[in-house]
Length: 299
Image (spheres, rainbow, N blue to C red):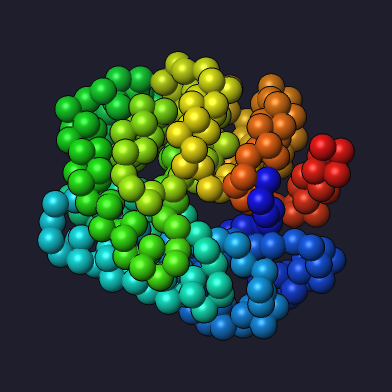
């Protein structure tokens, strides 16, 4: 493990950030996609030289970038938002930018939850839904023509984002997503395709991979090993959820929230890698920090 830290996705108040930073002087941080400009200004003195990554877009923008679109306006807006995130990354000396890179649609994906759910309710997405709650996609979704075309568009466009980030000394890390209809980058095969892109890194989200292995029927640990074998994983997002093949929930819960989740095998693989590990749990930060600290010290 290179560095470890905590995502600010679950900390919405400056006082909370200051308290955690004070209790754990060795702790680093990842800036979150839900942070507004005023919040970034207030936490800047607290986080000086302690930011190891940024989850784009940061500050929060109206849309999540969609580099699977062929719409010139959507691509232009996505690049503009990435440029703004680069400004933030440089200010906080963050060497890695984590990105959800694209979606099945041509439109921009709204960052507002209600607007996003309204878009995902369109027939384009709903035809691939197997579980209504959470819009969980069916097993054949990544093999569909629409998905493969979107992945090909993403593959052709994401190189320009890598180069833009690299010019400013930042590594772009594409994250594997949870199995929601309309999302991309869910399977080991997707990342084998993206691994051909020069300068691109990966953020391996453990909780998302756990849900996806139920949805698509691959082995969780084998899939993790195959992504690590690309030698492109530069960061991990570490969290757990209660998903078991019947429950489909990307809750970003405590590391020990699911007794069936192979936590210690997963942690063993993570600490052996030259990549950062970011806790992306949304509650009980002290509890999860202590679990990870204990494992690191024992390793």
